[in-house]
Length: 289
Image (cartoon, rainbow, N blue to C red):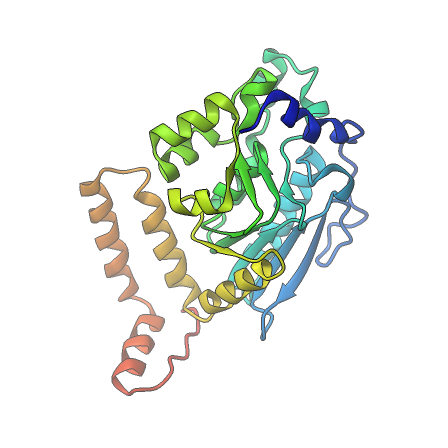
């Protein structure tokens, strides 16, 4: 079980973290400082974003989120991209937020600046996003993974919300998304103790959908993203909206929204093509219309 001493073994190496430094270019294909972006998949239909702060275990600083949000916007607006994969390194998906950026903040500055408000851009992406998690997903890293639609974990991944050990609480959805994913008892234990759970326990609790060997989890996530990208992008967005609504609405309200979105698919060419292809026993050729 995690302890303050164990947490500090992770936190201490991160003390040299630096603040935000803008990337040299914000054009498509830019050379970022804190992330790496690529097109993946047979037809380049998957956008891959890799967090890359190797000296800080991919700690989440303001500059990283500026770059991440830019990459998300780029892939969101690219008609060729059908799904996105977000990952880190074998050692860490993200070991938490940049404590040096938070250490001297006050209530007034947090409230006035809407601190962390731009961290939830990932949760508002309409295209499906898969997190491929290896190593540490702690604090903000766990919260970032939970903003994704699907989480695949490497067999050595560890998840935790250790903010209590630093005298604070999760601030980017950790108390909310974690509770919805694993239930009150486990979420309360993780938030109040800061203890970590393994990839296997996370799968059993419903936090992640599948566990893979460390060396294959990213490829498996890309393979899943490719499969998603072959479907109609507009219908995939509707399906994602319907599932997400289940966490915000009552069952009755959710069923009503589902029915409206279901009816809406009948206004698309892709619904017509999908059913026609099924009847004609051929592969559907979706055109995202």
